[in-house]
Image (tube, one colour):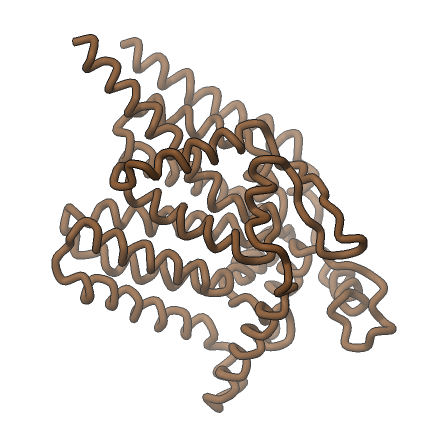
Length: 368
């Protein structure tokens, strides 16, 4: 009975937190998007072809909104923000067409993420109150709250990454649909942002199966990869209709790759740890000084230390450790924005929950 009361209390707190947040930030969901105004900003932004016209800076959330709206209304995928695939921007554009607002879709994605992340936590900890507490605490993270009020790509990426990880955990049940879910979720991840994240997720699957000594590993990892590639290509159907020559798509992807490779390649490595531990983020513009991020809080160093120490017993909570390790290495070797930590910190929280519950069980066993 006590557990049920605790669960009900935590659910109530989560719902109250959601309601209070949305009331506080209602203006983000009431603003009507003006495509003409966005077009004007874009034409004079850092992306203007003529240098003399570059008078304004268009932020990512507005760039993705403009791109998504243009994709769905014109079908032209090769002119705006080609460095990222179109699916995430399709979703933002759909929110604009349905609600005249680019952020309402983020509410749906945010709630979906919390539900799925709770399910993942419960699968790992087998503890309802702890999983609910994780959701309540993570919801307070500013890095998550920004995703709810800005039309960025990290939140949909997180939703389908959690779906992908859940399908790997469910692999033991030998569900026939697991491979389909894995392939589709990988394809969706690849279609939201440049496919590096999807590749890291695929590597996570491979090493997870390898360490667990799964049978027929090659078949289990190649089938979802093949499905992901097919789905990725389908996302570009409007492009293929307007550009039927196969080399057109090849050239588009080469351009996207070159853009990513040109992103300040001399940026110092391992800056991610400066952010996690010291809230020091090295700017690559202007005087190139260290700046702080508004997202940071004192839990970040604790979460990072907890994760690094937990690597000592790597096979415990194996799946989360493999993904987190790959993504941490990826962020360490590239230029990044602090909001990219969203796909890392959420799993650091989950690792902390796992370690705490594991320690609690050990103490109880000793008392018996």
